[in-house]
Amino acid sequence: MSDKLVFRFDVQGDDFTSAGQASVQVKKNLRQLGFDTDTIKRVSIAMYEGEINMVIHAGGGIAEVSVCEEYIEIVLEDKGPGIADIDKAMQAGYSTAPDSIRSLGFGAGMGLPNMKKNSDSMEITSEVGVGTRIVMRVNI
Amino acid sequence: MTVETFAKEFDFKVLSLPSPEKEVTGAYVGDLLSWVMGRANSGDVWITIMSNVNIAAVATLADTACILLAEGVVLDDEVLSVAKNKGINVLSSEKSAYSIAKMISDTV
Ligand SMILES: Nc1ncnc2c1ncn2[C@@H]1O[C@H](COP(=O)(O)OP(=O)(O)OP(=O)(O)O)[C@@H](O)[C@H]1O
Ligand SMILES: [Mg+2]
Image 1 (spheres, rainbow over the protein chains, first blue to last red):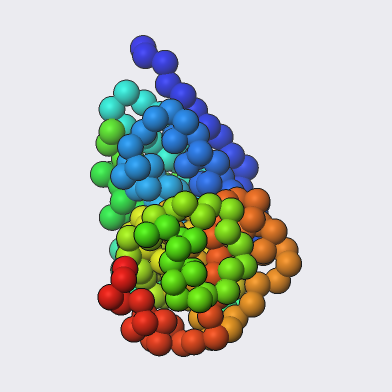
Image 2 (cartoon, rainbow over the protein chains, first blue to last red):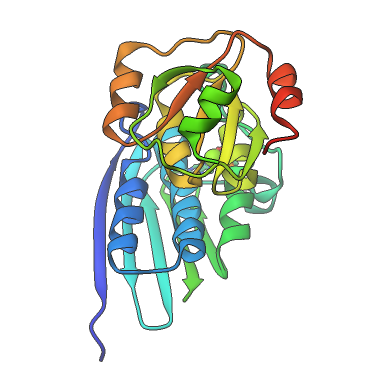
């Protein structure tokens, strides 16, 4: 087994003043590790959208980023309401964000599509009333 | 050109300039954060009317050269101090996003 580096974050729900901080920290860490800007940006965007979704839609959760030999893996896990129809949620423009959230600039329904676009693989498992787990990988 | 030169050239108001040497290489106009995240390129001037604290994280992660607030939008002190601490350049203008884009289009 080769060593892998793991960063772990508690993401607070409904806290918009610090929302995105875990992603900003990961960006910093990856830069220090010497990754190229393209890889850093893809990981940052994929993680930010997932982080914000946990803040807005799920009351917070846990984010874990592992730097492995061939890929960077982002795992986002929450105990929120779950996603009833994942295919629908994945559609560009689909959003259940309330007006209060939209006025902050969220709710375009582009977060999940951005996560898909910026990762090489993305797996969503979700159960209504239980929570959501998303695993993304960005190849390096 | 650098953000500092860019601000001078077009006489934009400087609200925060902790990273004056950042290179301006393009521009993106938008207020919906996920669109900006998905579409803005590194080095873009991000023209927006959105002014809440979340623009700081988006500018950092999308790696924009600066935020350019259109329509005379102002930042509250809290957001301004976040921008300064996080190394995020913020400029502003009384002009509309369209007018700004038109004005800078030959340069960036
Ligand atoms: N972690 C989650 N828990 C529960 N529902 C979620 C979660 N993530 C996404 N969703 C659901 O999927 C929808 C689409 O998510 P997506 O990120 O694409 O858009 P959005 O968050 O509504 O807007 P944007 O990301 O553009 O600001 C959300 O509106 C929400 O209904
Ligand atoms: Mg989202």
